[in-house]
Image (cartoon, rainbow, N blue to C red; front, top):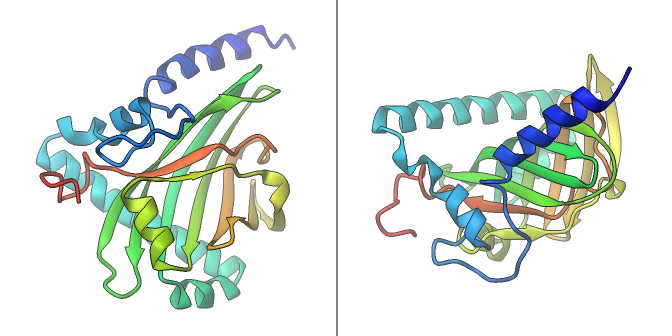
Length: 221
C-alpha cells in the first residue's frame, strides 16, 4: 500500500498541530510558557465560555482518575510512589511523526499531595525525527520535590526525554504500559492507547500550565 495518502494526512494534521505546539527554546514568556508558540497554546482555552471550561475541567479530572486506577491495577507499586511524592500530574497526549517532523499536544491536570487542588496543564512538543506514525498516550508524572513542581507550574518543565530510557511493564489489549524517568525528580508511567509504540524521538517536551483553563487566570500565579 502506498504511503502517499498517509503522509499527506499526517502532514496536513501537523500544520494544524504546529500552530499550538511549542518551539524548543530557552526563552521564558511572561505567562510561564517557554516560547511564543507555547504561550499561545497555554492561553488558547481563554476563549471558551465558563461552562465549556468547567466541562473540560471535569473531563480532565475524570481522565486523571481513570488513568490512575488503570496504572495502579497494572503496577500496584505506582500507588505508593504517588502517595509519597510531593505532587503528581496526569496527561492525555498525542504525537504525530511525519517524515522528518514531529509535533504533539496534550491536556492534563496536576495535584499537590498536600492539598489535592488541581492545576490544569498542557503538554506541547515540536521537533524533528525520522519515521511516519501517530501515537496516542496517557502519562502519569510523579514529581518528587517542590522545586520541580513549581518549575512545571510556573516557567514550564522543559525536558529532553527518550523512549529508550523507559522499560515496558506489560501489554494489555491494544495498549502498552511503560515506566521510566526523564528527570531525577520525576518518575513517568506512559500508557500507549493507539498507534505505534513510543519512539526514541518523542522527547523535547514542555509541560506548562494551562493559563486559559486554570481558574486563577487573572494573576497568572
